[in-house]
Image 1 (cartoon, rainbow, N blue to C red):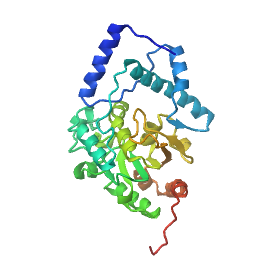
Image 2: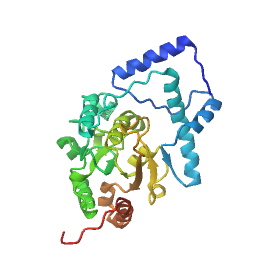
Image 3: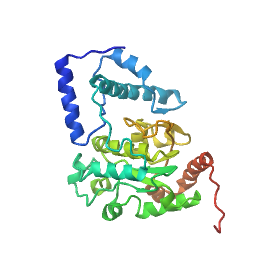
Image 4: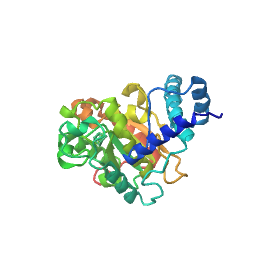
Length: 295
Ligand code: SF4
């Protein structure tokens, strides 16, 4: 399907996109499609889903979100001005992550930069990790130390990782937003939308086999779905980071599992058994065996 734009409008939009690139903004998200519905419908058929599920009601919701993504992708193609991200072509994931961190800079892209953050909490762990954990955002300890999951919830996450037979340094850990929301409030949608492209670039760089979303905020942002945590748990989703191409075109994407946030498990330890079931599902997929008690 061919879509044409007025040359003047096309030029103006191309200028705008170039300007955004200069600011370090490479991905464009929109809540609603500006293209005609017929165009969006046709385009959404040609753009692969970045997540998939067998649940009919979730398929419906995801199709709607995908249409919006399709419109965004289509607009990029129309402009023909999508330039590669700074880390494109850098095959060493550690170097690529460093480039993404430099691109993030002393970020002021969303209002969290002026709400009391001490520092940006980028992410930590193995740049070639097969398993990646994604939480919501830094808390007070993380803000102070500059590393995700170092407080009480972090200790519990460490124990969960150990129970899987892994060490913290084997996995990669990051959050949807990289600055501490004041009072540990839930990050707002505009903050998540502004920050998550950097998370998507981290995931596309690391190319994990499995991403575990810790809690509802991470799950909803990664999957672009608004279901409850209970509805999202218990199965894998096929996941590709939205709006980012991996450096390895052969990377098939990750499987994504959803479980409880460790901070929630600290408040309600009765759910630890359920979280362990989620992790066992991940272990089975990764071929991990439960370590012996004295290991
Ligand atoms: Fe920038 Fe993310 Fe911090 Fe917002 S939360 S200021 S987008 S690093």
